[in-house]
Length: 436
Image 1 (cartoon, rainbow, N blue to C red):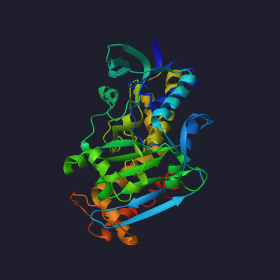
Image 2: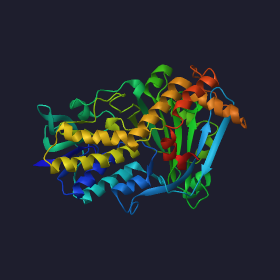
Image 3: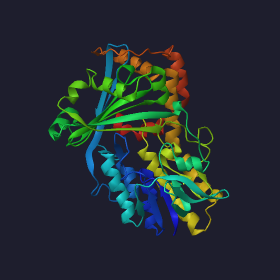
C-alpha cells in the first residue's frame, strides 16, 4: 500500500497532522518508536487549551487533564546569595491561552487516539531509520527491520535528533550549545489536598506553576520547574549540553541540588519519586535564513515540531509550535495531494506560513531572548538584578559552581533591550496568563 501521508512520530505535531489529514479522507499512517505515544516525553507538562481546540473542537472533552493553571510563581535565586526574589500572580481569565497541566505519557496517548478515531493508522514499536529516495524525492521510510512504508508525502515529526530529517538532507546534528538536556522526576504524594494546599491558586482547584531561575538552583544556563498535577508534581530541570560540559556536573546532580534547596525542600516533604525521564530538546533558531536548519521541506517531505527545532528557546516550550505547525503541514499536504503535486515548490508553502506566522515569530523572539539572557547578560545576572532590586528575602544555599560572564552595567543591558521592546510584545502576550 502507498499511503498519502507517512507520519514519523505520534507526538503533538505528528498526531495533529494525522488527525486533520485523516478527517479529510487521506490514507495516513503514524509510525511511533515507543511502546505508546508519549512514553519518552519529559515535558512539565503544560499544554494550551485554545491551540488544542484548533485540532479537537470540543477539547478538553474526555481528555486526561490534571489541573487548570491559573498563574505562576517565579523565583530568582542567584549565586552566591543570600538574597532572592519572588513574583507571583493568578488570574481566572483563560480567554487567551487557557493553560492546562497534563501527564504527557497519558495525554499523548489520548491525543494520538483522536487521529486514529479520524481514520489514521498507528504503528508502534517501529523505528524509522532511513528514507525511500527516488532521486531528490522522498517517497516514504525504511524501518530498522527493513520494512518499506511508502507514501506520497513523509512528515518527519521524530523529535530533536530527527533521523528522518537528517537522512532527507534537510538538517544536520545541532551543536551542544543549541541543545538542552532535560530530566523530569514524577514526585508522587498520592493526596490531592497536599498539592492544592502547597500550589493552589485559590481559584477553584487551579494551581500555580513554579519556575526557579539562578545558579544556586539550576546552574547558569537553565531553570528548574515544578508543575502540579492532581496528586503529584512534575519536577523538571533543563540546561544546555554545553553547560554540563563546562561545569562538569550532570543533570541529576543539578536536579538534586534543586530538590534540596531551602526554598524547594519543604514543599516536597512527604513525596517520593515515581518515575524518572530524561530527554534532549532543541533550543536552536529554526528559521532557515538565520538558524541551524537547512529547510523544513523538500520534495515529498516536511518536518514538524522538535525535529524542525520548533521549541521556544527562552522557556523550552515546544507543544504550541508543534501543534500549530502540524496543522499548517496538514493543510499544505491536502492541497498538494489534491493537485497531485508533492514537489518542494508546492510544499514550500508550509515553511512560508509557519515562519511568517505566530510560530515563527515566537521562536525567533524566544531565541533572541535566550541569547541575551544566557550568553550576554546570563540568567544568574538577571537573577541577581531581580533579587537586589526587591531585596526582601534572604536565604543561603551553597553551590560550588564558579559563575562568570556577569553583565557589566545596566546601560549596556538596556541598550540591547530597547530595539526589541516592541518585537517581544507578541511573545509576552502569548504567556501573559502564566507570568502576570
